[in-house]
Length: 259
Length: 275
Image (cartoon, rainbow over all chains, first blue to last red; front, side):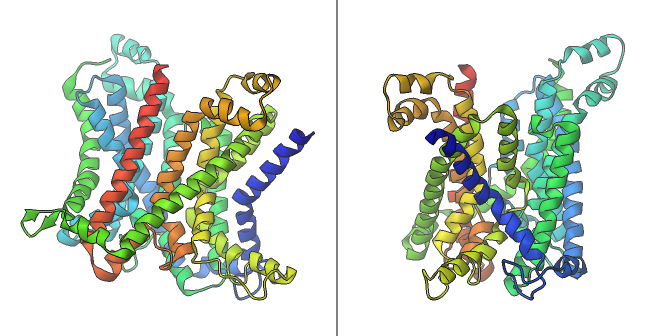
């Protein structure tokens, strides 16, 4: 009897702790009042609408989108060939290369951002946006290599060897035989990279300049000066966006198989 | 396996060179700054850093909070993971999904919610005042408690998932057998469950501990300059004082901790594969 009760109570408490804050933030963002509060003072969509009207949010959303999509694509362009070589070829020093490529995941992002600012942006007069793009690409690269490698390792290599024996070129075999088979893994890597980059704060912390800021950084500085519910509304919108992406990915792809 | 070396290098080098140039080289230069003084190499910066009481306090606080969050996550994690693995398969999948869900959501959004909850006019204070437990709002924000709660919420899912997979790999009859043989629940946990799921605990613990050590957003939003942790201290040293030497020292501390944890994880993973 005691055991029957234990599980639901524990799970209810843990889920309330993990998910409850989102429900509160969604409710707070629907408030009609001037300041952040829960329970909300009347219901309205004014703060949700306000989010779309704030100029800096629109600009930083665009930059975050560009970084997440562009950075992930660049990471895949670098990462797919590397993963292919690491899983199909005898690469001398493979372990070292794997460590170099995956180190950005281990080193705290704030250090990467600072190092880029100090040794790339300042001395070489790099644009902030370019530095952000490079940093986000480096950050996503480990995820791309890991997920694509996993799906390459699950794919038998004799089918491409068969293609080569039958007269297909090595490149042809890759594009006609391998690529179609690891499409799911590549898509999964794209989604993981996108979400990682979009939510990323520490890397971008030092890499912001006039007019160039990622959305999470913009939210951080906005909440320092104002206490209105628009950041809550934006947080809720972003949460729904992430959930939508993950839901679609799981539905059509079985995303969790890859991650 | 293809043997062609030139092809292999052509495929792998762009990624390696990119990571090396954009990431490895700048970080190594940054770290070397902490050991330079003019033209000579020295560890003076490290001695200076640790001789200041503020820095000592921040360093110890970071370790303390990370350890506390890890311990709390382990306790709650076991309770939750144990409840989850005993659910029927359908419910297990759903609840696990709900536990993982927050990981996909922006940490800024996840942390911001605690301002609504713990703020002066937040839910907790409203409840305390209206029940009469407190005459005036208690300050939760910008305290270690707030940072602790925020970090725990951020990283608890990692611990729960690690423990779920560890508990699932445990022999099914181990717990009932121990019960039949007369062990009480405390003995079952310390003598049966804990030794059999040790690896999962270490993996989850390492993820939570390094995550908390190197967190920026949570201490920045919920701790502010009152509750500095290593990353927020680094940010403050750079933006307020242009102090790149301290930044380099903090960076090395963080990197050493992160790599040590990663090494531990890798060792555990290979040990498990061999078995």
